[in-house]
Length: 281
Image 1 (cartoon, helix red, strand yellow):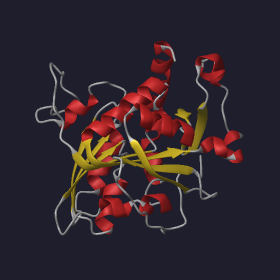
Image 2: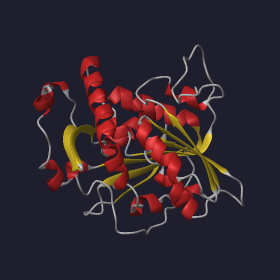
Image 3: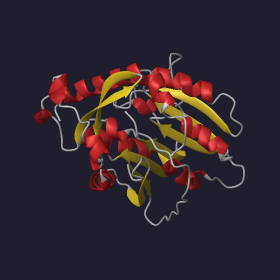
């Protein structure tokens, strides 16, 4: 993908979240079956505080899920949208078992992990200039749900996957919205020419979808299917330990993946409310 197209799509999504942040927050208050299913990966031995990084944390609802489940954790949430981070700080201010901090960073910027290192966070919540190599802390679990799908271009998605691996000392857990697998979402696809982008500029799996909850807006998405997931993992030096699909009216609209090191095993629990993201737009 050409840089100019990538830049336009990133700008489109930045504007989208600025427009819909509060409405988006209102639709992301509950916990999906898929999110509940990954909870076993967040069980630390005894009462040791588990270091968790949530990349693309949005309104921080996963921190609230950890707290509801009684997980003792030191949780760091990173997101590019200031309004969602403000809502996250408000909703997690009084959690019993999860100690939270939230940091603003643009994940498309190559130096975004520098915000996690000592001295890497300015008072404004933006990244300071990275004048050299910064060693970022490792987290027992790195979570990145419904986020990689917003990065245009395979190379950019791969760079983020490598960042997630470098930041993790244990599992990397991801989810990807499978909107192209749903007839009802395929019917909503928008012609990219309406935002001045030729279809020829896009990659297979790229799409534009509308948002019509409270306000109207348009977002860019890319469907990372299981084949691309496995290619990304291999290119990033990761092992796909487990995948499953859950959520949505169809109960399979999100592809979840647990990445780790060869030889490790994992068992997922099932259950959770019959509720899902991306069922309305």
